[in-house]
Image 1 (spheres, rainbow, N blue to C red):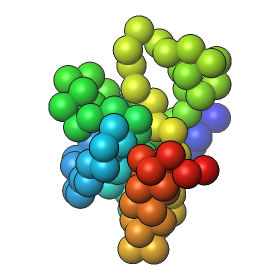
Image 2: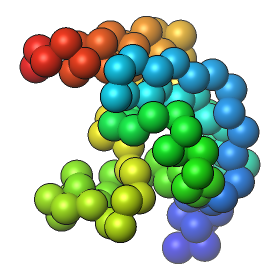
Image 3: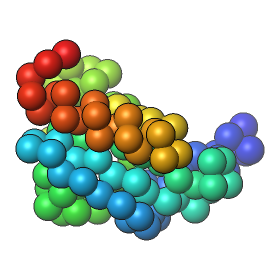
Image 4: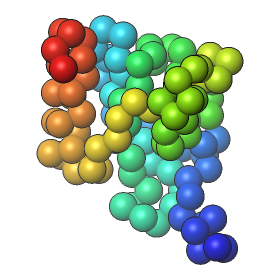
Length: 104
């Protein structure tokens, strides 16, 4: 259990490595202080970068609207995660563009 705790990212301790906004969607590449995948996460949010920066805590786990069907007092959770690679970044951008266009 302790090992699992060590590998779980601290939502308040991250570094922004890359960002792309596509309409109401924001794709982030974040680096957390964990060893798994070098701490890197590629996440897609249905929120603007400004909204995400206001909340300061960016939990890479699904929650709120995704798991319960309702939002947690305006807190934004990711709607998708991708492998932390160049291909994963491209896939995340393609996903956000597809969502923005209304295609499924």
